[in-house]
Image (cartoon, rainbow, N blue to C red):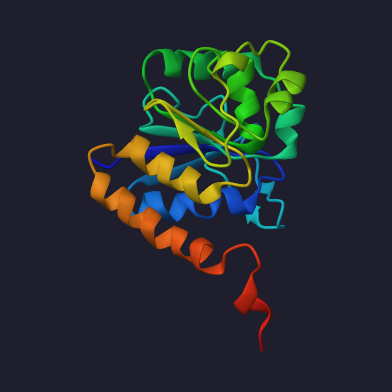
Amino acid sequence: MTETVVVLLQPGAADWEMGPVLPVLKEYFGAAIKTASPDGKSVHTMGGVLIDVDTGYDTADLKEASLVILIGSDAWMRFDDAALNNRLRARADAGGPIAAICAGTLALARAGVLDGRPHTSNSGPFLSENAPSYAGEAYYRDVAHAVSDGVVATAPGSAPSSFAVACAALLHPEKNAEVVGYWNMTRGEFEALGTELGSIWKS
């Protein structure tokens, strides 16, 4: 059976946050990718790419999807949809995997999904200041990489690589070797460059 991944996009979606994860899930793990926007209309990403989405939030099949991913965008700062919040909370309560990165975590905070599980985001104040109903401060992890409890994965916008790994692990927890293999391939460039970006500056 082919797993379906539903990706919730907003206008101005951050290209680098979806860039690593979607090809990994589709090409390495065989998932079908379905995209959705708030109104079902096309969206321009932050990098200017036009995405002709498959559906709107109200018709996206969040219940039966194998994984739901929320990609960051500044638009999430202003977007608070009670119907979507309820559907996200119901999915998490039923054990349905969800992953959110950057400002996409605000939707989970507003839905109460993060209140009782380990999670991260751009910062603790980022969640509390932009999602007044958020009550998960005690479970916040101030780390630079993705965090997952096996049902919900979250990441700061600066961690798209570990976010891709966390999403793959949510979709296929049984494929540990493949997920670790992808991470080992990805992390090599960061470890080799270090903090000074030495060889990039050399002619």
